[in-house]
Image (cartoon, rainbow, N blue to C red; front, side, top):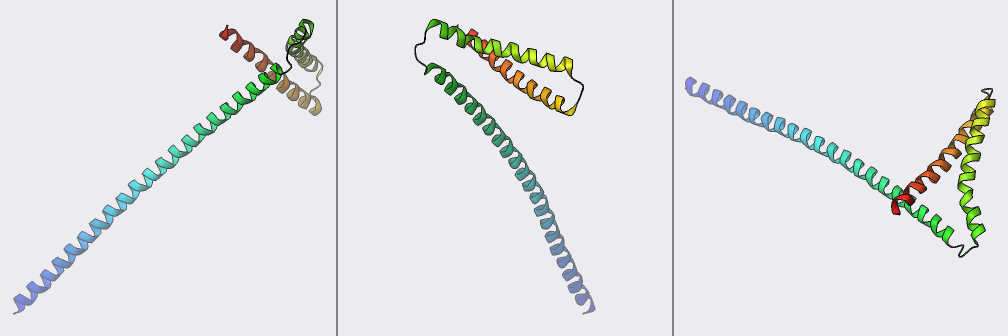
Amino acid sequence: MVFELLTTIVGALVGSGGSALSKWLELKDKKENFKHEIKLLEMQKELSASETENELAIAQEASFADMRIASYEHDKSAGETSRWVNNILRLVRPVLTILLITLVWIIWLTTENSRLQSEIISNVMFMSSAALTWWFGDRARNSRKK
């Protein structure tokens, strides 16, 4: 009888231990699955952010193209003009470019490194770079079409 009682107790302990071990392994497996799911969600988040950046860049490029086309259409909307008016209009960009480059050099050569002059330099540099990139970028694009 004592042997049967011990056997029953040991059987219950082994059964409980096996059940506990099984539950522990199941919880460990779920924890690993959660880790993998979290990694997948993070990867999806990064991919989504990357896709959003790409879509934003595409939208910006499309917007810039639309603005450039609108600018060209505005220039065309003037209709037929005389030859001397066309020649004067064609001189605006080169004259603006030369004036801005000259202005940059004058300020650069006469600067005394004051705060105001540094602001003027940065603003003139911005205007010059915008004019130069528009002017030469536009010319490069037009020369490829011909």
